[in-house]
Structure formats: C-alpha cells, structure tokens
Image (cartoon, rainbow, N blue to C red):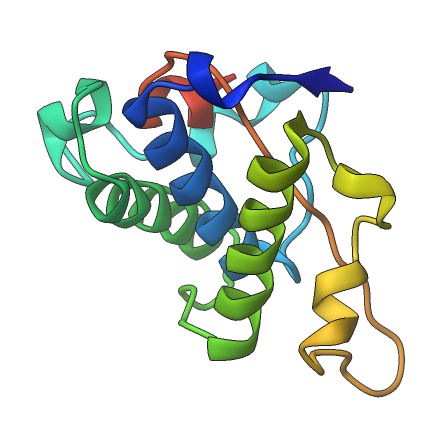
Length: 151
C-alpha cells in the first residue's frame, strides 16, 4: 500500500488518479488485464486512433484522459466482440467516493481507509443480481494514457 501526503500531491496526480478511477468505474464488469500483456498487443488501439497524439500527452485534463482511456478500452472490447463501454451513474459515484477516500486517508490503495475494494460499489447500490464479478484497476505515476494501456 502506498501513501502520499497532500502537500506532495501535484494537480496532475489528482487528475490522473481521478481519471483512472472513473475508467475503473466504467470497467468494473470488464476483465482485468493479464500479467503477460504482450500477448494481447493486438487488442491495443493504434496510435492513430483514440485521439492520436493525445495518447502520449501528459498534460491532459482528467476528462480528456478519461475519454482517451474509454476509447482504448472500447477498441479492445470491439476486437473481442464486446460492446463499447457506457456510462453508469452509480459506478461514477462509486469511483468518485473511492477517490475521495484515497485523498482523505492519504493512501493509494485498493483498500484505502481500511475499506474493501468493493465497499463503495455496494454502498451506492450497484450490485447486480445473480452471478457477477468486478475488478478495479488503479494507476499512479507519470505515464500517459497510451503507456498505461500498453503496460
């Protein structure tokens, strides 16, 4: 578990973390990326797609980062015959609350503030009936949207 102090947290880090968590909210029902990602390079959007040079831009706003990541994930889903991602207000609320927890507790962690990974998913009322699964992907660093998708 990583910790960070609010005085050391640059604006780009907050924007990147927020964008990553929004993307997570959109992907909760998608499969988690395997450890051997190079076997799945064929699923990656070409650099000419999804905003082109925006994939390599480190100065994007959180909403711009979210749009690039959504496009890249939707591209991979289309390659495997799945439908594109769509917004879900409950998952957005869940990811916003998770972001707030990480900032409040100063912990960049799946279990920020000692809560389970799916704490906010359940709290906002997003728990589909029947059999379901969820995953959470969070990233922290100076990587671009394209680099995150390719790692």
